Image (cartoon, rainbow, N blue to C red; front, top):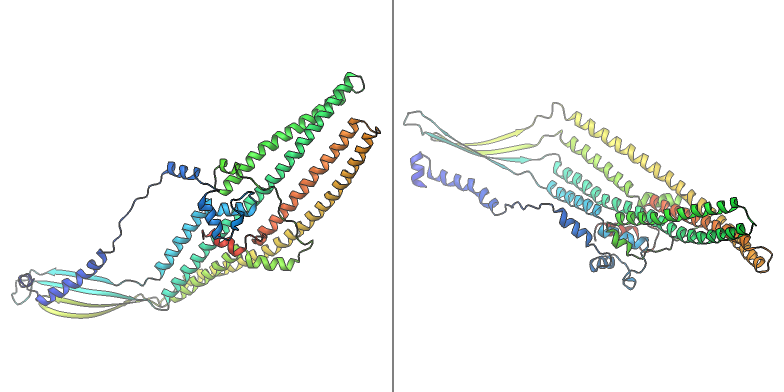
Length: 480
């Protein structure tokens, strides 16, 4: 080192110090370099993993226990809305996407907290001047130390925190949409199962009617027109049954899609035929429902985070009116002279004071405020409508139950008359058809009430079951 310094006419102490300073950053950072690891996508492996998803497996049951599902109810015998919701929270891939987006936002939150690093600048020069009094080389070394002003770092951290919280709420929003899709599909499936049973009974009865008309036509007691009409009605009912059987497969496929499971696994589940609890009060105070909606709606909480984010952006742009400062201490060895320096640099922001960016973010805050007000108004209105639809559906179900009871009483009376010979078999068969029509109307009214309850639940974004609370639902959606 000393020989090298003498050959270049540098002071040996300067060369030693400079070399150490220059090599220190490389020494410390070389130990922490990360290597790139390729992770190519494998569609075949993804397909195999999808087919291996098992709703009765150990991992899913452990997930249920971790989220408060009663251990004495395992293994699940009847899959209702709550059980299927847990299943979607565990298996559906769209939640994995939003969870990873949240982790990305968390990483950005940590990155925002980092302080700007100093930079090291160096230079070397050579002179062809033949004057022996001058040293032929010059070397400079300086460090730029950035200093942020006006609390910009904390504002960046606050900005990243709002983005992270928004990404976290997006997980719950995606999970809630899955729950709503499951509730709708399950209600349609339950209606389909009821209609299949009723329609099968109707086909059996219409076949009896056709057989009776065929016998009467052979005896000359009925016309071919009556027989043709009965056959056409039988064909229509058979076509209706076929459509409902095909629709059952479609509904199971939709349910499998909402759960993130293979269709074969969903077909093996014993889906619950019990409808949503209908023990709601006849009239729920609209104000109470509106307060519940404003406290639980995930999109409202996301809108609040977006407004807070807009405010943070505005504060950051206002802080940018005050320029950051860079302090640059340095040393230069210039052709035999030792020079020490201290530099100071900054952007000249006092000319425009960041007016355009401040104006833009101010308008962004106004937009977010207007959007929040519009969303809040819509939620309040939707809550009132959903409450009214439940009252209407409850009244319709009550009316259909009364009509069905009267029809059943009429059918029992007709059965006694048939046993006493007062009416014939054909007339009694048509009376039973009227009873089947009443059952169809009752099943449809029951489904409409289910739909209204799910719509209110979706409007409130608050589970009405006692098994899953709002807090437990959101924790489960995070994969906890």
